[in-house]
Length: 222
Image (cartoon, rainbow, N blue to C red):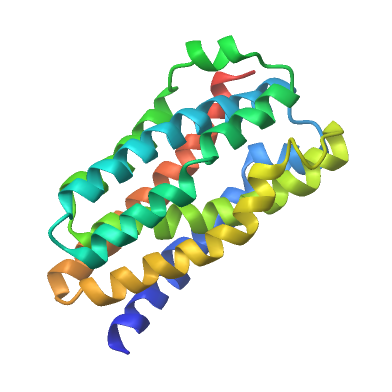
């Protein structure tokens, strides 16, 4: 119970305020207005495609890293399977906006996206199991919320339909389960004050980097 309360405090004190800040930033303000450029929408597609490809490799490495622990191994095997289609779903959104396959083949991460992805991989490979799942708790909570915005306003203002927006309809549902699974791992594994301190710091860093990711997309894709 104490650890469940600790995870709730991370959600209430760090993640939810971060989500609110994300919803208020210029990227999503302009998306709601319909004034966000198509190029900046394409930028999200390119950068999130790259991010999802890296996450799949991270999950594969986590499976090896935790092969001695059946519970954690199965957790990461499940996450790998769940995420396996997501690069293509992110790409599909960009293709509907006029990008070509060559754009994805040639894409490289912009600075803010590179730093955000690097933080996720740092937690996966160098962090404890509790630190590892902080990235999922933060990132998937934020993705679930911003998927609602994309799903509503990409359809309303940019004439996109079900196929183009499938990434968002999937994440509006699936990430609820994924955040619950991450919460469970953190509650079970963050047993000491030191471990809880590391979890709290990781959550703070990940929120800041997620906000920076969207600032970087906005600035890099005029």
